[in-house]
Image (cartoon, rainbow, N blue to C red; front, side, top):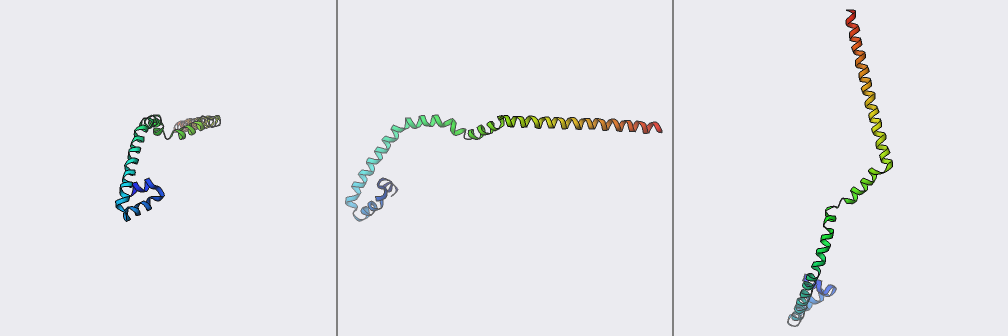
Length: 123
């Protein structure tokens, strides 16, 4: 059924009805056409194999690198000067924050040491 439908397209239903109504006359004609088409498709397949092989070879690495466009767009965003400036400013702010915290910590620990020294001196 499927082969006849593919071979005769929109007339496939009519051909199947003819096979049911008059099998002795329609089957030899349909069978010959199916064999001819099968040979034609096999010949086409063997002719196209080298071409398909080269196309597959060319597309092999592209098929594995399906995320290329995503990586490329993300890379362009990361390299953009606007983004680089933003990263530099963020790192500068982080470094300044660390410096402030370490300065405050050292100042606090110095003050607590001096307070503990002064309280021990009073005793």
